[in-house]
Length: 258
Image (cartoon, one colour):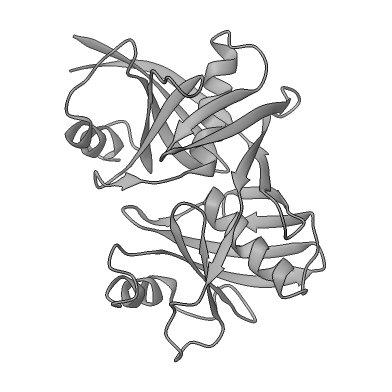
């Protein structure tokens, strides 16, 4: 069986899109590990699988490069929205994701393909170790630890992330982000994601960092989030749903053998 796939990226956080409604693969975990392998497969941070939904236009599953399931993925939703738009879907798109419905709309198709996603309400709590007083926790359907520093390279992000994965406050691990305030409406961020490692961008992570800055009144909406792979824009009034806007790039279409 030949499997049609599309390679896409959102600020260079890259994914392989699989329409499971057409190609009903059974073992997505093994397939994700193979297809995301940058040496033996197509190469990506994750696999986006689209399925039929009774609650929305389509159900979206995001599987990390290591085969683990991501509860939510802002960059992946944007890529999937562009894929569906170019496949003929008209108007805003509702995705069933992790038990909730996420809505996306195409903002522009030229000169850059931009998609806006309603990301839900960033929920803050404090299960982070007191030994790192600059750390904040944000729940966007998936867990995020945000650490603001004087510079995004002030700490060893991989070592910091590894410490959080082993902390009892995070039995299922957490995404970890180093952020630097660079203006009233801008932050610079580096990301480490569960199941992947260092990434060029993280959509939910960008929202988490902007939300912390807005709540601490060090930044105001809209916030431009500069990541290694480009720029994302977060809008949030601190009392409703946050919105994430960013690029969605189609890299190539291909087919592989099952």
